[in-house]
Image 1 (cartoon, one colour):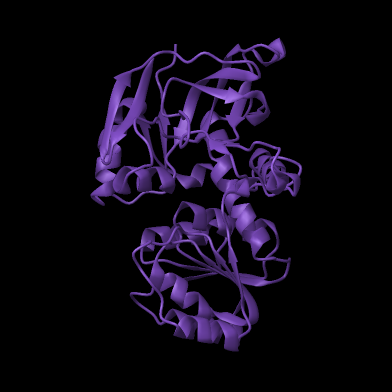
Image 2 (spheres, helix red, strand yellow):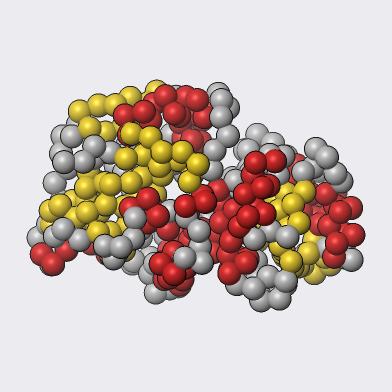
Length: 347
């Protein structure tokens, strides 16, 4: 079968690889749509822990084969991939903290993923789909669950105000969830006017470009003392630093973007955090008890009823064979994008 293989840092190639076989408790999924995650781009640009690896965890397809102890009722059924594979035996899993599992695996990172014609998936990592749901919409369920989990970590409640700093794909998903969950006022911050226009269409009432305005001053003017919740979704030190200035005293901040490991913040950040008695929350993945969690059931329902707009999230579609060039162009910042969908060859 054809697969896109990361063979080294910035070395992505299309290869013929052996067809995987599902073991007991697993299925073979024919991939029909797979999306690029920011973590895939990071692994391409910065390197990965092991090579070769087939990336891709935001995917959906059709069950083509089942392993032992798996119901044959799955044959031919549509499913989206739940990529985290916890061990379900450690103390963290017993507490429902699956993303903190001591021995987890992950489809598209620690084992072969969906940038391929087929991928092996444990049966318990399948999300059954109706025939009416488009594969590309199903592939975006996973990143939407991350946005839902971000709001959970920030203890968001209906009627609160919120600011999303970084209107990329996860930021735009956060804007949508804030709208769905009843935020009183939603603000989005980004340096891209295109991203801000998308945020406005998806529910943001106030959009701000730091290249044009003083963001903190504008948010203080709009709210009086800052927002209840600030979400850092850009993965940039300057936006993380800015969260302090846009959040009201005793408000909440969630770190949703992956920060550069070679950067730092001044201790003034901690001083301001203390003086305003802010709550600073980390966010990693999107899971809760019972596995995979309410983030997944709520997102699935929101995609099905149309309240979560997946079509607006997709900016580009390509054949899977174009992946090496697309990743190279992304790394070179040759074009803006939201979600990019790859379609593997289908029989």
